[in-house]
Image (cartoon, rainbow, N blue to C red; front, side, top):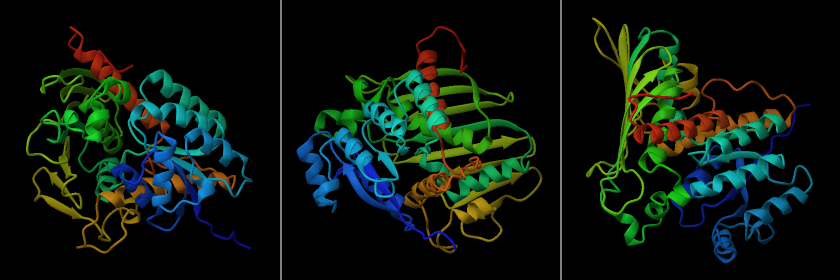
Length: 387
């Protein structure tokens, strides 16, 4: 007799009623009816946490004043009644203590990016995951787009030949002025080294660019030559970054990320060039992927069509011609992680399939990337080794 389907129980730390990213995570995790939001410690102060929980419909006995209380009381519940996973959507400085405690207690974790502040913390989390076997996902959500999966598939198939050049750019303009001085909560913590970490724009969105490059090409960065700038007077972290890259196969790359490009919104772009052709994808128009092969007409791949690879089709919810985007891509990261959680619960955890979801190892690589970028920018050497 087949096992009766049940929704996975989701808990959340951070992401109160007015938090943009908390709402995104709740919508993404529950979009396909495979999880339900049942518990939370939704703010850094008990009163605000409980107020948010009430506003979002949490039961009183699972509306916690702190993440420590949530961990203690959920751990005390019988197996099958406690949460199946916790989503961590706090400012960056709280990722490590919360993730460490829940993973050590045997709870699956979904954590926002960047993973933690230091490589030492990342190594500790990786060791805990290896020892406990918990599923640990990091929400580099752009890897969830169907056409990103199609791009990775075409490269794996060898359609553009050996990779020679990669250009990835992330253009924003929302911090072109000192918004953190005007009471903008998101700007306040992202420009505060104590909460954000050692990097500003490069940690916030440059980490997304690095992950997209690695996910699609299957290559890691071997060397970095970085130039970080703080353009807005009085700001303590970088708001613009320009990197030259050397990749492990000998290919060259350019990565730039900026939050002071006035007029830009959320323009993440990727171009990959091989010996036989190139690929181009843009997040603000995410349902299309361009393939340019030498001596042939340009091809346009469109989301939702049967000619796409299985991974791209599986990441699609509605027919072609209907726009799909940000929330659905986020949901695909959750689907991959929840697939692994169900397998773990059944005692049959499979090896993670490439591209299912970003793991703690992807998060750890992202932390190292941030550290080495900052090191390179402050060094007189031309190139900094990633190792």
